[in-house]
Image 1 (spheres, rainbow, N blue to C red):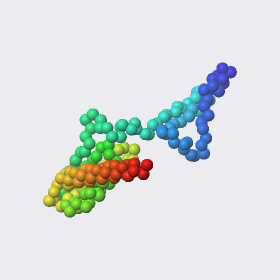
Image 2: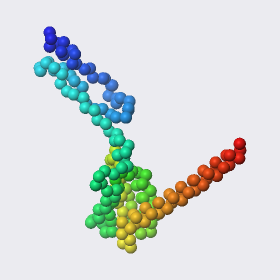
Image 3: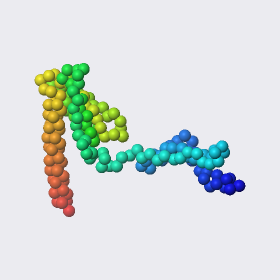
Image 4: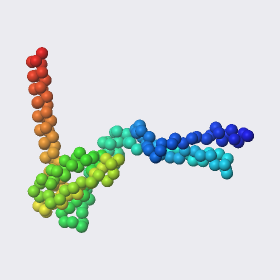
Length: 170
């Protein structure tokens, strides 16, 4: 009798969702709800919580000893290298790829994000030999920084002009 009461108290009914995931609330949980097994007289199983979303600061702050960019020279293809960018995503990857493919000395440039949950991308670059892949990437980065500084200045100028024009209307 005491064993039956113990079973009833410890039994947890799993939620039946009809094969659907619950609404996303910042983390997904997966696991196995407890089920009564009469052979051993109790609940079997446990529930495992898995948080798939990292803390926001982990997306852009480098860990101790972690490098922002690593370079690996390709041995199968001449004048080629593979760059791994840590704590970056499609935004920088696509900007660099676009800038590199417009360069006269770059034969091939492409990037890949190995997994969407990790802020890492790999950029493969092949040049014609007049410049090294590292020089091409550094040059593309310098050009992007100049373009973004120009964009910032133009935006700030337009914003200030809009504020001045808005004050006249009052």
